Length: 279
Image 1: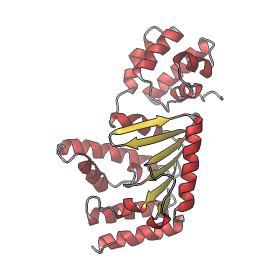
Image 2: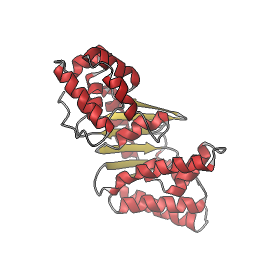
Image 3: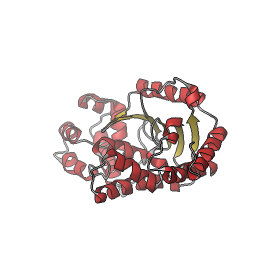
Image 4: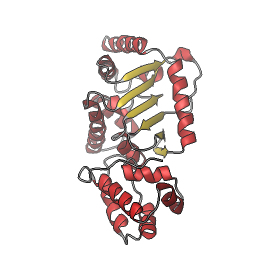
């Protein structure tokens, strides 16, 4: 497996830790696969740690210090990259998302975070926890909005989203919120910033009926798949699993409307919501 490119240690604590891990591994004369074997993980996982696409957990920091003879360096410093404004089950995925070059996502029940407006994000988070303090909801919405700034770059990352029709017809936050949310998605698609396809009800059964799916590709690390449920999430780097999920996504895109027809449906539904007509 090709080694990671040089990282800029000043870019983030995670980049610094990844660069130090690579330096310590090479000093010990170990390949990524050999070090992974000693930690009971894959060589790809070591590569992701070095590239900064995976967060170093305390248990791995302890093992790295033991294997590489770095005293307690990784244990002391992994805390610096452990702080996150995202829920624990999603933090690692959000951080990987921030450095991905390509993101493919299927959203069965809601507009995904990277495409949400602040009002829609507020409605979603309030639905998640109806008893949360308003200050807590504000923090959650700020975190969601911060993620959308990934799309401020004109071309990176490449974002390809398949939206289930159910997500568009579920009036989350009310009709005015939905009209704004769908217009926002349509605007991003019209500006060629994202590729959006709608999986219509007429498609019937499909390959991802069991839930949401996110695939991420990176410049200098193996791809990842992310699976999410209620209050849970899991990153998967097993090549066979990721390949299977990529095939699943390809089946979804084959069953979905074309980008042009999807944009027309988004516009029509947004207009219906705005005019308080039943979509």
